[in-house]
Length: 108
Length: 115
Image (cartoon, rainbow over all chains, first blue to last red; front, side, top):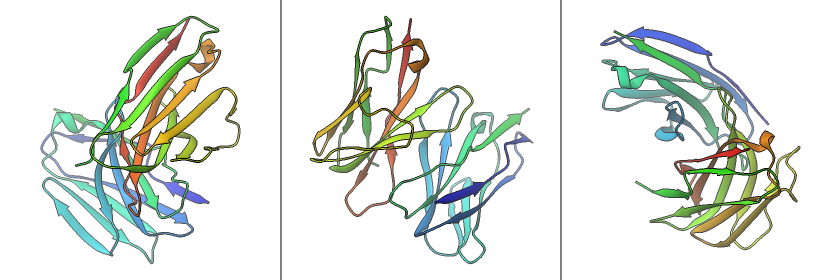
């Protein structure tokens, strides 16, 4: 099975940087996904980390430590439109499971 | 990137009727499709996993006779909510995954309201 832990809610100021942490315990781990979900919409794919380290993609970066069962999503230069839920999802098991997600609120 | 469509995007029906939701992968062959349900302010809950040409695998607590899943081709899976009741009102989202790939691509979701 899978056990995923990430904060329920975070708030940040427009233009700032925020880091959303995720710890997980899972069997058959191959990599870790991050998805973004705006209220009332379906999730959209953000990143997939297979190897340890930081991968940067524009304003968003994702980090993975396989030995520690730890990942984070780093959002820079926050914009109001970044207000959404961010879902951490370990990949590799046949049956995917998503955490409850972290609700990020960006305020002016 | 891969595109997954869902139809309809929104449906309102009377209690007791059946509703069919279609999920299509537009630019890749989806050997596996997943059906999720999400209630307001709740996490995504996996309902079933659908593999092309075989019976769907349902999660515990999901009634297979109520939520009929058909995955007849590599680009189409359907979910039929039979004899829908108000408690079935929810946001239904499908996702698709290509053979050998791990990334799931989500459809835009179908919002079902049963009166």
